Image (cartoon, rainbow, N blue to C red):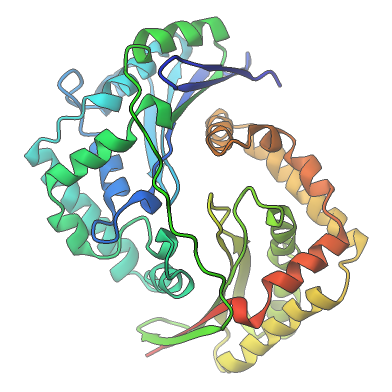
Length: 410
């Protein structure tokens, strides 16, 4: 795979991968801003601003209309670390993406009517996904349990509806002007297009946008957790649920790959230990999953599960701990590790077949300063040893490092 890189004088980082077989060109503009960059009293800003970016500018009153006329599509997402905008267009119309993204990088108008419309859209999303959906508030509860200092303690949607409903337009505009800058962004382009063409259009449309005196906020470091945290809540849900979270390192820390291997040993595929032993054999759970947050700052290892009707949640939790303790005591057999490595390599390959996914993945890696590691990720996973897995499990699965939530039927 050929990967070209450049940096414009204003700090915009350019990535390009030529793929002759693609009929579409994929353009991804990733900003280094997410929910973690918000103020505790003004949460949900990054996500609300993502919505407003589709409300258009003076030059482009409706963002989607010209793209659709040109045969293209666009979308976006926000998480705690980043906000990402992505467009796909036929190659003959690809320049349109460069113009439109450069325009909204600095020309959003924040008209009151448009802001009010998107407030209501986000408020309805808050209600549908968090307040009115079974188990919808789990992430909010768990984040508040696990994080006491770091802004990962709130979800991307925000802490409460009033933060979206009442935030002044001036605060939204200030957030936009602070973080939406070429020197806080990565532009990734994948498709049947030359690097020379990408650079010509990048300079043409982004080159005149000035860099900003941008300093990333210094975020508080989450203190090491030494005592187990427990909580019980009652909700109108169909089944009892058990959630356990453990603090782990960031996407760039040494324990990331061993912890990800652990999550796959426990739950990836039909032969994952938790599914095989606790769902199929012992029938303690109807479903169970283990996964990592993969966040830019120190994150979490999560276990999400639904307990089988008639089973004590306490007994179900004890069974989970037995499986976790086994990883701390015994080396994972080489055959089991090889299966995990093969599965990851397969998933990595298939993820990057899609031009949209490839664009997103290289942009994320570049923003983290981890592009080289991303390009050789299969080798990084193959290098993880059984001893490294056991060592990581010993640190990860300490009782004092856990937050346990019983989410029970009312």
